Image (cartoon, rainbow, N blue to C red; front, side, top):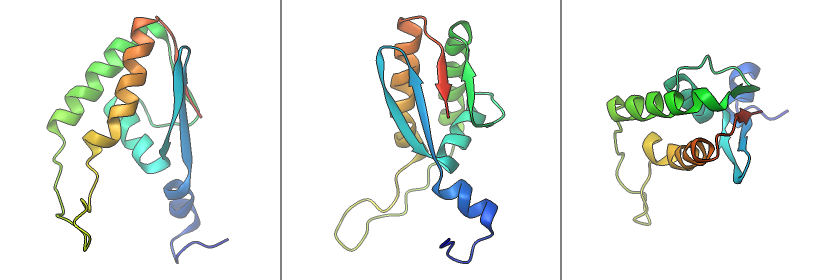
Length: 113
């Protein structure tokens, strides 16, 4: 397996995709390292797979939003074509925030695998 010289456990976490799902909303996929960071901000261990019961989703969303508000996003400028060279964690979290809001509105559990 191609691993760019990284230890296998680090390479696997980097390329792993995590799918978040809830009823009445499209599944979203995030890279494993980003998903784990967001799960930690939500107050969870980062274990994959996992779930949040419907009654606990509002608190998880609140923790995520609080964590993102204190997370430093260092912009790294633009690439040679004038495109942003860095996507902030706050921007990467937006689809998950929308999924959590939908889960709250529909009183649904949230799962990830």
